Image (cartoon, helix red, strand yellow):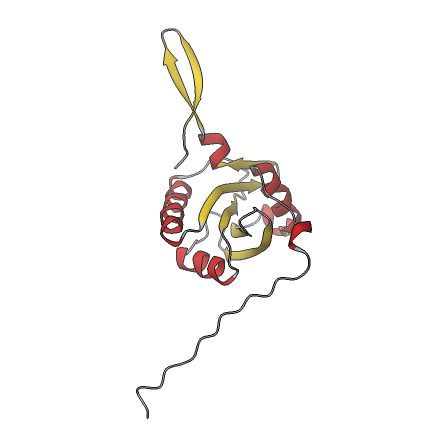
Length: 166
């Protein structure tokens, strides 16, 4: 047995078609519309699944990857699988999405935690996490859109100010 023999690894990526006609994601609604058309409607209200949208520098969709399928109350998002997929696709940015079969659009503590972990890991790899969406049959929740504003109390009045969500 030769202990010094190492497996050769080759990386390749082949996109199909003209990249300029692929959907462009500008806001959460764009991502939701792409995802809801790709989601298995028979599973949306049945069990939790997670997916990522892979984007190029112009926020054009390179593809969608099914990351995991869990049970009624949760699914596992492995950051290593997220970023190995993004690296293989030569993605510059990603959008994380998962569904809540319960129909609850609010993020759990675990949802917020994985979003922060992926945001931090993405900084190291220069693959930006643009958003994290919760999908239900009744709509979606965008962490970036919903958490970008916070209330500021000034005397007896409130105002909304932009705040980075991460």
